[in-house]
Image (tube, rainbow, N blue to C red; front, side, top):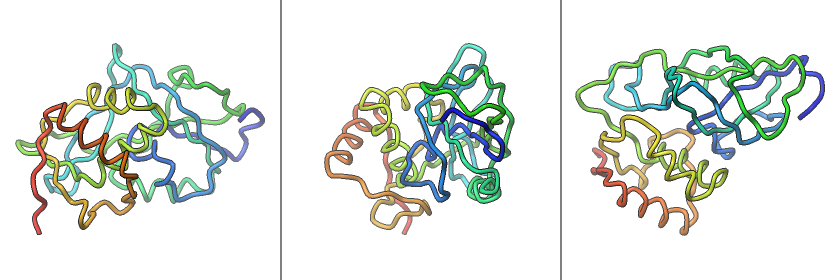
Length: 198
């Protein structure tokens, strides 16, 4: 991805953006990366529901694995619309460690939830979690998917089993081996799965 960054922008994906199957713009490229000084967490959406979304907060002692995506500047409004519950935050390029160099003069951002209030009850939609975990499984392997759970705050929330009628707008199809692994991982981690209201 070397070259001139004029007309380009990069953003660090740490949730569903890690799954390339959820991308809706013709990106320039993407590479696994690590964001230093931030921690991932589940928080409530900003629309007064109990539904959870992934966000990040500053934490000098933490880091996050994810996908560094290089896109065209003209696609940024579409990405902002996708991430409507988030604010786009500029990053210090030195905080991102990637296997490949970014184009010169390419700004880097991360999307942070507009509200980071933790309610008494928090619900994670399984179709959303599936998209996230499939991305980590494909980019970082089984250990990376397990690390995602271990390094994300808020997994005491209930997981709504909505695979039969996915509520996540960019739901993905899991391969049988992926579903078996993810189900075993959730069980191993003692996560609570409850029926989705229906």
